[in-house]
Length: 462
Image (cartoon, rainbow, N blue to C red; front, side, top):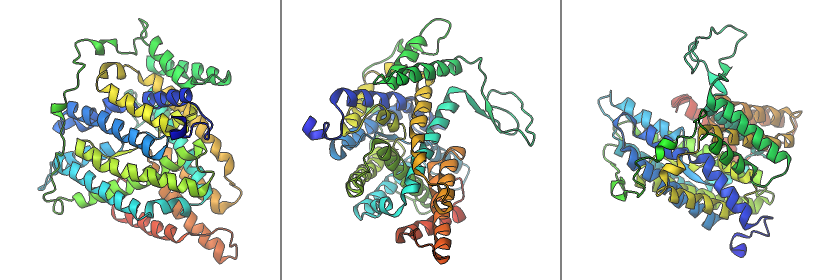
């Protein structure tokens, strides 16, 4: 095992990797409950079939990432992309050419084939060389803030006002000096248990306890069982059928008819664009945090292999009956626990497959436990900001836009897009002014045009 995963070479051991893998699983296990809720709503797909597809795709392709790439990155159906899938199908019901869920899955399958072609031709891998180091570090920091925002939002510590009404139903007059982002109600049990989780994990980290994040998740889950707190839903264990019913899986439920006449070409383009940058950002950000990109050439090869597995996972997930399977930003939680090799990913993948048989237990972990973990991971990923020279505005401004737009637009692709566009423009101006130290890779110009075209013709919501 040591020789296969290169544990000693990468400065880790079996115990650390397994702990890291379990941490990653526990921070992203929510997808087992959330994905069926999204894709199973409004009469789209069967929720249980989506649960099976979610667990199988996450398990199979995360194990593949570990075995074939030796990368500590987990994959599962992506949040945001599953919502886009659902809204595209639902919105089309009011048109003359409605899109069925099977056609939506076919669109996802095709986007995976496109990724596979881009990966085999090494166009996706070229992004690693083309994008300057400052933007790579900014991507890491931006993803860290993005993860922290997810944790704050899921915990209830942060709430967002829409048209003057906050998520808890309270009216808040939005004056010019007030933000649409507000502090959540501290009366909520999930909020104070998240704070407890932050305190527990923070203390353990200060004491340099290995597995601090995982221990924090477990302790909050156990505390949540105490009567009067009741944030851990023990009732979910009652009357459950623990054996998976694979006969309900929607395998190869794809409809390729009428793809060109229903507006699905736009959906395919959107899936492709968002997944391209989301995956790139996640892989580079996670690899950076794990110190796996110190050797540029070796890093490029490994990320290239990871992109290949990711591309296969997109189409493979569609075949199993779920929306786009992608690399998960929550993988950073495992890396933060010391995960450096594919053994971390294999552990996470095995846990997802076991979740097929112990689904009620897997769904016991409350959002307060995972929210605290995600906020802590945000702290760890923010450390890369020290590598960015903000006094050099050619890299400082694009880095800032990358960092700021990821969490505040709730979209990794937006941050990378604006970072690339602003860098190309500012580097071009600097070169014309005689400052030749900022090179512009030819691929950056192509991506620049694609980004501009995307926002011009598809819009910011695509």
